[in-house]
Length: 101
Image (cartoon, rainbow, N blue to C red):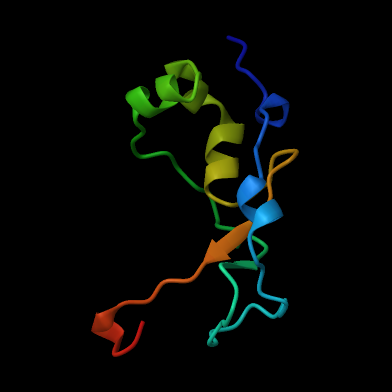
């Protein structure tokens, strides 16, 4: 069976193109100010496995449900590879439960 290639998908990186990035490239825990996201390289995981997926979300994205059977699907969504055009980033998370926003 032939599956679409992840590298053929069109990724819209408007978020990272238009919003302020953290100028520090060091991947460490720190206070990030006046930025919405930080640049990151995804962490490689050993032998990722797909446990479950949403057929409804795949359909919403215009992908056939069989798409999730492709190894590139698991490798890409686990962070083991970036597809052509993907822009990796991490967003900041804060909340009152940590004592500050």
